[in-house]
Length: 335
Image 1: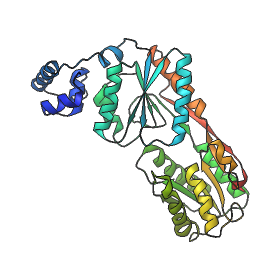
Image 2 (image 1 turned 90 degrees about the horizontal axis):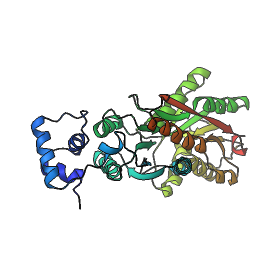
Image 3 (image 1 turned 180 degrees about the vertical axis):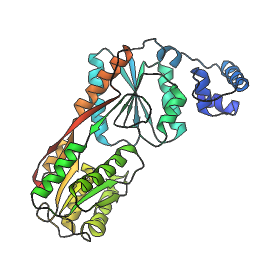
Image 4 (image 1 turned 45 degrees about the horizontal axis):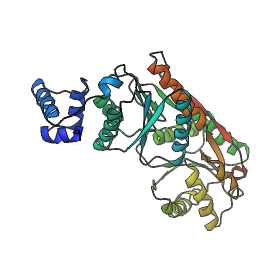
């Protein structure tokens, strides 16, 4: 069995990033000529086969697109993935999925999988942990067939993400037009770009509309069974003490638990507290009351991601940033 980048790194006493830079012949990571020679010698001795990025990311074709997805991704991302696969298949491409998380080693392992299978390009699906752009550059240097979807990077990598502001503004204005005076925002306490954008956006809307900035940083719950306790805490520590009569929450799952938490604490939806959530799968329309939401067009995201990637592979110009519109869907929970 051929050696992996991590095995070579361990033997050479260097980072995985350094080995990747040498094997992929990029200059994004500084590696001395002496150390570079050592890494190349160890790679030959261990039987490393660089059929990989050298072939695929520099012009060869495997008709395969790599998809990097966070191993803690929310369920709606997998709906986007389904549309990516459908559009890629229609274009004559297969997809290869690799899960990563917010550690250098896990990300390196994900990229190594792409290298081994010789993907033509990589779509990074909502992978926006701090420092990700440095990790991308470490592995791929200045290659131009990496597309970010649902995340943001300060580099010039092409990016596709949601245009949240018009729909969020419409939601808050709807609350106000229906007599709601105390409107709160509930956003997950995660150090990732998509949540930081929501925090900044809610604060901007409050400033623009000259309303109190009432914001709750919800503890992120990877385990669904913890949502009920977090919903009760939100009601008792945020909604009741601040006299809120409307909330805009970042998550449909948390929104569903919040409706139950409000009921457990003697508050009715929407009579006492109106609720709108950011994103909602269709089955949340079956809740009592049905859950109002800001809809993310998952089909448009997945379809556009593949279309942009195929243009990149054909060396055609693409926009640096592509915004996908969101839409407010009013249901009973909004009042």
